[in-house]
Length: 172
Image 1 (cartoon, rainbow, N blue to C red):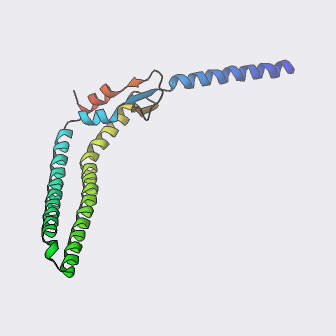
Image 2: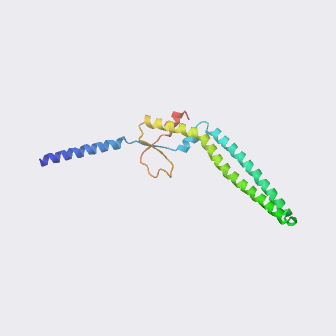
Image 3: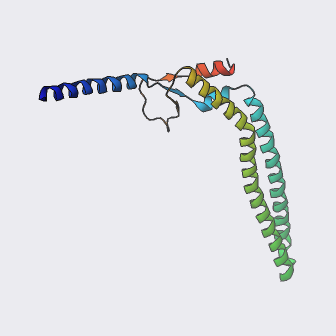
């Protein structure tokens, strides 16, 4: 009876090791530099140009507001000696309000620029993710990692699937 139990335990151990070994050999990990893929996609250059134009428009508006503030500030400084207290307070309040508008515009411009970037880049991100998913399924990858140094600190022999995904997207 003891021999039978030992035999069953030995068979279970061998089967367990075999299953674990087989599971390890079927694990396939690939990696890709996602930002490099995005930069290589056709049409992304036009997105960059649109974003630069939009940013320049916002920057021009900001410069105009700053110039207006600077002009009003210089006028205030040059005429402050001859102003009554009521006029000084009014001009100072006007300058403070203008500065507050400039600050609010800057914050709004930053959030608008980020939203515009997300709006223009998202279709490329979605297309790249679909291609990565298809390549991963077709090539039986268990995981595909974004190979940015801060994200992947250690990797054993894995496969860079950049060429496969570029081929899927028709990128040279």
